[in-house]
Image 1 (cartoon, rainbow, N blue to C red):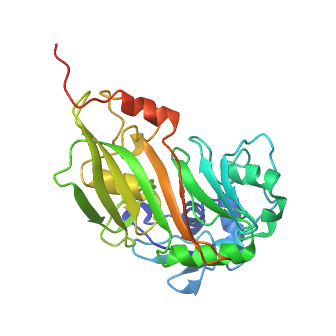
Image 2: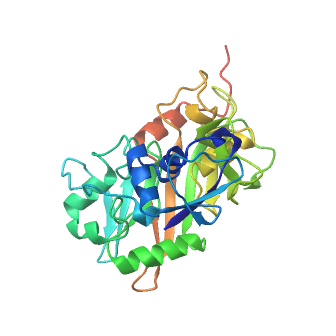
Length: 311
């Protein structure tokens, strides 16, 4: 699995090892090792050293399969997972808020992967050694449905299906404001924020990204708010959060993208992966899984009303 990144202005004149560490979500030390082993190219040519400084507009490709793994993630039975479906090929999990999906720089233990390995140790040999079984991710603060590959054939099939946009992913978000139309499509390329490489943003030279929106419920109190259904056609990092913020309706509780406001305080971004639809890698059967709203999000929505209370 390879990731391509066109350098934004925020990374102009940065060293390649820092850039690779951001792209692959690994430490600078591991980034240097990956570069030394030929796991990164710059403008199509093998990178000579992690010390080289790059310019805005250059293209870096990182081979995630070459991420060094000094010690593969191990099982952790203390991670309690809500497994809603499992067979010999796939594991479908209802991810809780706050759970990081896989070990990375700053999150070596206590992840969903560690919990999966405690239940299904054979997943250790599926996919990438550093993030076994993982074919897509949810942000730590996002809840809901995600699928993990239990077999290599499932991993290969699901990665291909995600690449071809053949996996249905429907989210529900509580967003600020009322929308001008009951349905909309946000078709806006995304990349790293030119002002802050730790954030994503809508950028003219980014990767194609499309989100379908449909209003479900509008509220008038304690502010103008909307419960909106979001369907992903692509799956970029922070895509829904960035696209909703870009059209002036950030997700309630999303401090990174302007959604943390005093009118309605939430402990995390109010975003939930409600439905996952896929073609089973073994049987070819279409399968759909749905997760009800988590308690914290339901409690926040319960504070909203259609009418403004009289004073």
